[in-house]
Structure formats: structure tokens, C-alpha cells
Image (tube, rainbow, N blue to C red; front, side):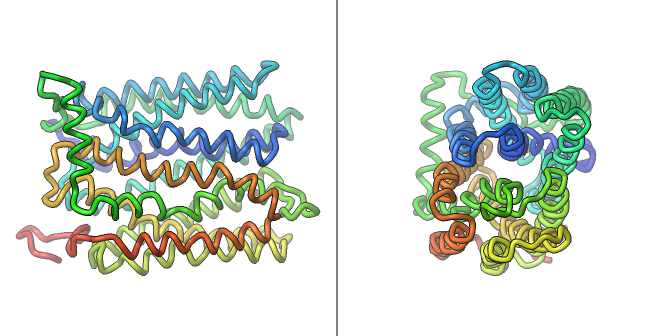
Length: 431
């Protein structure tokens, strides 16, 4: 095995994993809002962009069966970089909306496949206990990508819009810069990623269809798999609806129930302060799990994930004008979300790794988990814009609090290995 210090590649790998996701799921929302697209259209069409993450299990065995995951990672980063440059080129066109959506679809498929390879590579290059220990690190740099995307790039787009007097030109520059950054990331990972012995094709060399069936069947043969599926689909049921409307809520004028913030202010409050709080929450969640195990930390994490949704009800009712107050409220909700979401991530690692952590199909099974996670985000997100148009922001955010109840019910049904996620000492005893 060609070894590399994990700090040399895990931070950059997960930063690179986060950027295309935040571009497709969040920056596209801000960009389309700046360019005059309605809330209903934004929520509907950008929710469809979740589909590649939903159906990626259909091709996830290909990453296991053919080629090394290291090669998949580098190649797909070049593809994402090219797609970002293509988005910039579509914006001046007369049919820019349809063209940009098509390129976002291409980017989403490349990003979803990159996620399969990156998560599988992470599990192959790290022991099971180190996987849990580094959950906070990978989450941190994934969230830093969100800060760069939702914060820095949104602020940059707003500033360029003021400078050029054109939202289209501003977003062309932003997407072009991101494309160049991804080309650099691909070159770096071609050098920095280790070469673990386990990173090799797992196909039998025989019938590919039979190999596919074997991989999928092994996942669904788990005892009481229905509990797993319910949790994966429902844990973020409320958050899936909330997420699509936070940015429009902040940008919409006060007379229609929004906060009337400038694009730059949203970049500061939600994209910077909020994501920093999200990152701190994720780090703390990983640390807590590593100290006491996922099972013992589970319900505090679940509560912290869902209870802070109430801050958006308060923001919608009072419509504060202070950016400091808005930022503090957003930070509270995002900290709780980051803290609670760690339980979801570690649970997926537990399911993918199998009872002893030696599941030979862990890459494809983790992809299956994230596919169901994406489906749980996609379907509620699709109707959220229409629902907000019908209810108004105050009632919509009240509904988002009520919608946490299915999440609590699904959490009550899961079964967790009592010691999973807790660090061990060198003798294998619990520390």
C-alpha cells in the first residue's frame, strides 16, 4: 500500500465532493432567484436535480466492479470542472434556463458518481474505527465547501452583480472560476490519494448482471431492512422542505413575508455564519459519538437535529431587520442540524460496513444508503415551493416543525450496534 497522511487527502477530497453538490443544490437556487425565476419553478426543477443521487445505486456497482476508485475520482473531477465551465457558457444564450438545467443534470450525474467512488475509497483506505473518528473531519471540509459556495461565492456573485450591473455576467465569472478550481483539484488528487491494496475491481470476471444482482440482493437481505429504509427516507423529511425555501425566504421582500436581504447578506448569514455553525455542530457530533458510541448519543443528536427548526417560525413572524439577529438565529438552527446529521452519517457507515465492517460491497451499499437519503430529500423538496406559495412563509415554517414527527417515528425504529463509532485503544478495548 502506498500510504499518505489522511490529512493530506481527506480534507481536499471532501471539499471537492461538497462543491458540485452545493452548486447544484444551493447556488443554482440563488442564481435562478437572481435571474428572476419563481419560487415554484426553482423548488420543482432544482429538486429534480436530486435524481442522480437517488438513482446512483443503479450504477454504483460499476464503480466496485470496474476500475480503481482512485481513477474514478480523478477522472470525474475533470468532468465536473468541464461542466462548471459549460454552465458559464450557457447563461448568455436565449434559452439559458433550459441549457443551464441540462448542464446541471450532467454535473449532478458526475458528482453523484464521484460521491460513490470517494466514499468507497474513504472506507477502503481507513480502518472502521478511523472511519468513525474522521467523520467529523470529512464533514468539516464538506461544510467548508458549503461555506465557500453558499457564503463566499454568493457574496462574490452579489458584488460582481453590483459591479457589472448584470446577474448573468456575475454568475458567468463565478462558474468559470469554479471550473478552473476543479481542474486543479483533479491534478492534486492524482498525486495525493494513497493506493490501498483493497482498491481494486471486485467483479468475478464472469456474468456482470449476476454480479449486479449479488450486490443489490446482499443489501436487501439485511435483517429488518425496512427499518433501515424508513430511517433513511424520513430522517430529513422536514429539512428537505425547509432547505429549498430558506434562500428565497431571505431574499424575498418583506411585503410578501420574506426578510428582504441583499444577496451578499444571505451569503454572510446563511452561507458563512450558518455553515460555520453547521461545521462546528458536525465536528462536535463526531466527537461525541467517538466518545460514547452512536447508540448512546443517538437521541440527543436526533433532538438537536429537529427542534431548532422553530427559529424559522420566529424569523417569519417577527421579520427582524438586524443581520446580526438573523445570523444568530440561522446559526442556532444550523448548529443543531450539523450536530444531529452526524448520527445519520455514522449510521450509514454502520449499515454499509456490515456487522464486522468487512462487507466486500461496502462502496455499493453506502451508495444505496445515500441514494435513499437523496430520495428522502428530493420528493418533499419538489412540493415545498408550491406549498409555501399556498401557505405563506409563517404557516410553511410551522408545517416544517410538524413535519419532524415522521422523523422521530423512524428514529424510534432503528437498531444500532451498541459500540459502533466509539474509538478503541490499541488493544481493542473501548476507550
